[in-house]
Length: 190
Image 1 (cartoon, one colour):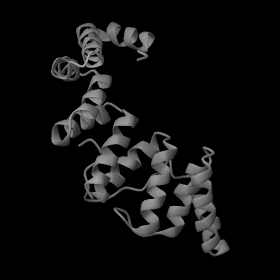
Image 2 (cartoon, rainbow, N blue to C red):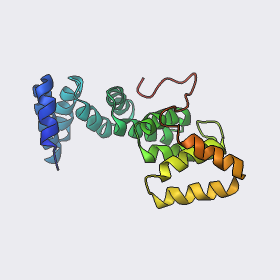
Image 3 (cartoon, rainbow, N blue to C red):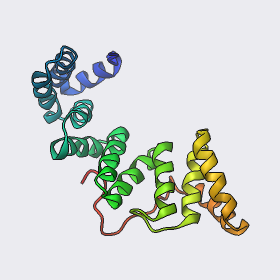
C-alpha cells in the first residue's frame, strides 16, 4: 500500500495529528486482516474530519453506514467520494440521486462522471432524456481520450442533425462552469 506521506504530513499540521495516526493505524490493521480494529480506527479518524478516512470507511462499510461516510467526504470536496456515492445510488436504481452526485464529480473534472451523465441522458435515467445534452457531456468526456467514450459520442453525434450536434458541441464548452441543476433533489452529500 502506498501512503502519501507528504499529504498526510500536511493534514497532520492542520491539527489532525491524532486522526492521521488513527487513519494510518487503521490501514495497517486492515492490511493485517484485522477488519474490526481497522474499521474502529478509521471511524475515529473519520469522526475527527479526516476526509481520506471518511472515503476509506465509506468504501469499507456497506449500506447506509458507508453512504453516511461517503456523504461526509463529499461535503469536504472529495471527487472520488461523489463518484462512489453515485455508483451506489445507481446500483440501487436511485438514478436521480446518482445523477446529482455524478454532476458534482463532473464539475470537478471527472471524465468518467461526464460520460455517465451523457449515458443517463441518452436513455433518460435520473435526468431528462436529451440527446443534445447527452452529446455535450460525452463530447466533454471524450476530450480525456477514452476511445470507448469517443466512439459513443461519435455514434450519438451521427444520429443527430448537424444543428443539434453543433449545439451539443457549444454546450460542452460551458457545462463544467455552468452545470445543470436538478430541482427538488438535495445536492450530493446532503
